Amino acid sequence: MCRELSLLAIERDLKRTNPGTPAKPGHNPPGSMLFSDVKAVFFDLDDTLCGYWDAAKTGLDIVFTEYAQNGTTPSQLKKAWANEFRTFAKEVKSDAWYERYCRDGGSSRTELMRRTLAAVDADTAQAEEISTRYLEERQNALHLFEGSLETLQALKGKYPLGLITNGPGDIQRLEIEKLGISDFFDSFHIEGEMGYGKPDPRVFTNAENAANARGPENLMVGNSAQHDIKPAQQAGWHTAWVRRPSDVSPSSRTGRQEELPVDMAQPDFILADLRALLDHLA
Image: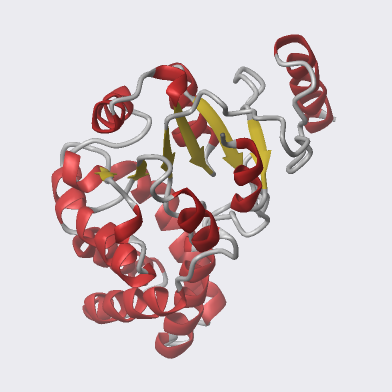
């Protein structure tokens, strides 16, 4: 019932503030020129251009199957990892961890594995080895979504393109290299390299300066309502919210996609395939 009421509130807000914009992906009519004033386009990376959570789930499945020990099962290890992740994801943003997290993704990844093993009374001395194997398998499984490459190819040279992504600097650069997309972007705004990340408004100011574009001349394309869409709206940007069924963290309690908060404005466009952008850019 609460979820139904939330959806009704979103629909009311939509009709009141942006008549005719659909609440479901891909319903904007081709040729509507929704983003005709856009001069620069910025993309999030994980679960916008590439399937990060799918790759993470594959990596966890492999390493926990390999390292299940002392009567523990892969399922128990995954459950322990999810529990520890929910706590540690907040802790890495604290003063005690944040500088290390930005500089070196391996330190926080290994600490999370150590806590996971400790939670099931397994040998924590293997934490670093398991952490390294997990990174390898996650990277092996990482791939661009269908349509991502085609979209970047179509937009390159027509707009300044930027990448705005949270996460440790070394890990985000590894992902960019693995995916082979570095040459498409004119600017990179990576949390680990800047020392702050989305939704910090400085991220969006830096992006505007890099593209020499202001407010609605910018378009943010991302999968996170809280980290991509909301702060871009607050900066006066256009927004395209990417929603895919795969966008569910292995630590999720519900197994469902993020919903748009009822107190948040509707994005300009909701899509499930990045190629849908191409019909709406001048």
